[in-house]
Amino acid sequence: MVHSGGVTLGIVLAAVAAILVGSTLQRLSGTGVGLVVAPVLAMLMGPALGVFVTNSTTVVSGFLIMLSVFRDVDWKRYLIFLPMALLGAVPAAFLVRELPAAWLNIVLGSVVLVALVLTFATPRVPHVRNHTLTAAAGAVGGFLNTSAGVAAPAMVMYSRFARWDQRSFAATMQPTFMTMGIFSVATKLLVGATAVGQLPPWWLFPIIVVTVVVGIRVGAWLASRVSLDAARMVAITLAGVGGAVAVVRGVVMLV
Image (cartoon, rainbow, N blue to C red; front, side):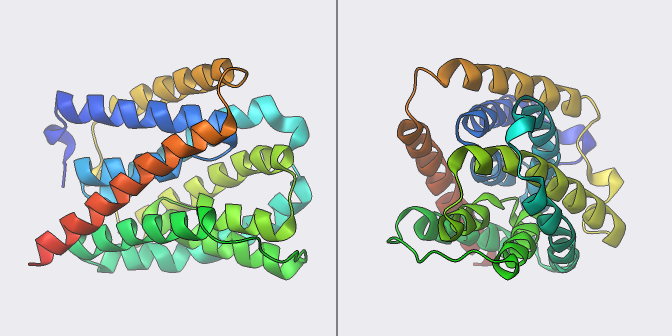
């Protein structure tokens, strides 16, 4: 675990690189920050603090990207996600508080790997569109975002069932991820899963904001130059490697 005085230049540079890539992918496809950043920061800072900083990053990226896609947001669905995300965040915060670091690594890595398989390797799913499924997606997303920093796969699976238009989905995910990030940060601080004294030094957070802004600009520039499939392949590869490393690290810690 990294404490305020233990953040090295190497950790900062690696975190900035992960956040830059994640923010760029988020601008391109609507998702990416959690999948890419959570496993990397978990390796650098420990799973609990790494996911906490990831949650903080999604608040910034979600808010900033939302400003440019505001007109395409489906606010009706967002308002269903909103209370259910909080419902999922609360038990996840207690889980993070109680689980040892080794098991948190295993949980985080497993969530990423299983989510990647479910999201990108499953065949065509039936068309289901009702408020119950929307509410369930919000609750599961809130739980996974708080426990592992990775809500996107649950939301992507929901979008496939609902046959949700990609443009509207990508836009709606921005306030959704922003809100889930706020809930995750708040609940973990309230239940003591993360203590203020464990947080990185304050100057790391302005760096995160600047990095997210740069990533969004890069993503906007690449939007007309890089295919969505190529961007997704980068995200899948980085997330898969990070998830596998997190699982191995957790198992080694247990042994």
